[in-house]
Structures are given as structure tokens and as C-alpha cells.
Image (cartoon, rainbow, N blue to C red):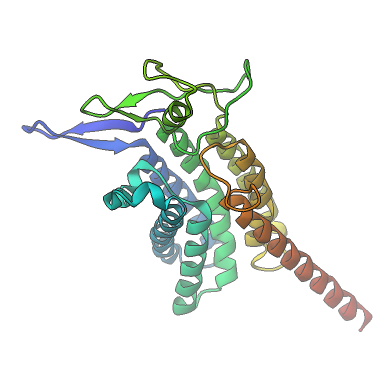
Length: 290
């Protein structure tokens, strides 16, 4: 964990501009995702520069939507200090909040610009999968989205450090503070207990999701199928990973908010995908019979 990637000194002044790991990795994810979208746009005969404009809108909407849902879900943590809501660079984005906001923004943008919305969303889905690979690494460096306690001797377990602010007060990491609150570690301990590196699990899963969508892209039968496949693959992966995470409280029948959202997302996407494929098969048989 290293929340501050580096600090840029200001000449002639005793100031440093911190470059936060979480924000930096989000930026890297955006840039690599944008490259994927621009490349596919060029292959589809669409204006890559217009896709750049779209991705900037998507980025803004995704951050705002992701932050909004996260703050609503953890409102108690921000009620006493609302200014903390603005500190997005410290982490705290809900994927599904950002996903729904970004998808809506993309659809509105495409309608205004006369672009094929489903085709554009398919390209964006592939780019998003790659961008999430970097985003989750940012989560790991930031210390958020940490996992549950790992079994003793577990090979991939990690320990997050105790961090202090400028006044010497313990202010992190999130995993250490949680373990301290539970009484599992003390103030004198330098690290949290070993936990699952769920951020890296997510990053690896997102990478395989990117590979799968990239491989299947040329085999899609209709525009919009990549978005559906993104949801079909991501939702169960997220549901399972939530079992290993220890930073979210249950909201319904022992399920976290992300698990509750993942269920209808998966079922709806799978139902639409099957419906569309059956429709194509039926149309093909009718055409063949004619």
C-alpha cells in the first residue's frame, strides 16, 4: 500500500504536489481504455476524436455516479464531515453507481450526436474492462476494498500497514483501522492481520474479462451483445469476490449492496442475450424456409 505515489516539489517554495496512487491508476486506466475505444472506433468507421469526447463525459459521469452511490451507502462516515465527500482522490467509488451513470451519459451523448448507441457501448465495454484492471490496482495501493482475514499461511495473503497523519494520529490503512476497531490488533502493531488481496483478485478477473470480450467482439451477432456479455461475466465475478471482501456491510439478507445489484444485472443481461440470440435463430430459420 502506498497512497502517495510521488510528490512533485515546487521550485523556490517549500511545497510539494502529491500524486495519489488511486487517482494516477484511474488516469492510466482511462487512457488505456480510451486507446481501445479509439482503435475500435476507427475499425468501425466512427470518428475516434468524437469517441475521445464521449469517454471524457463517461469518465466524469462515472466518477460522479460512483461517488454518489458510495456516499449514500456509507453516509454515516460522511455525515459528520461532509467535506470528505469531495476527496475522491482518497478512494471511495461504487462500480455500479459509476457504471449506470456512465451508460446513461453515453446513451444521451450518442442520441445527440446521431451515433449508433449500442455499437458505441460495445466498444466502451471492452475499454472499461481494461480500465478496471488499473483501477483495482489503484484500490490496492490506496488500501481500500480490502479483503477478509485470510487463513494462516495462505500464500497470497497481504498485510496493510498502520499509517499516521502529519500530527502523528493513526489514520489508516482502512484494513488496519478495521482490525483495530475489532480488537484484533493494537496501536503498537505496525500491520493489519493477513487479508485476502481482493483488489488484485478483481484486477486479474477484469483482465480476463477484457481478454474474453476482445476475443468475442468479432463474433457478435448484433450490436449491444458486448455490453450484455460484460454484465453476464462481471456480475457473478463481483458477487463471488464480495464474499471475500471485508469493507462492505450487508444490506439485505446478508448480502452486500454490490451483491444485491449483481443478481438482477446478471439475470436481466442473460435473459436479453438469450432472447436476442433466439430471435436471430428464428429469423434465420424463417428466412431459410422462405
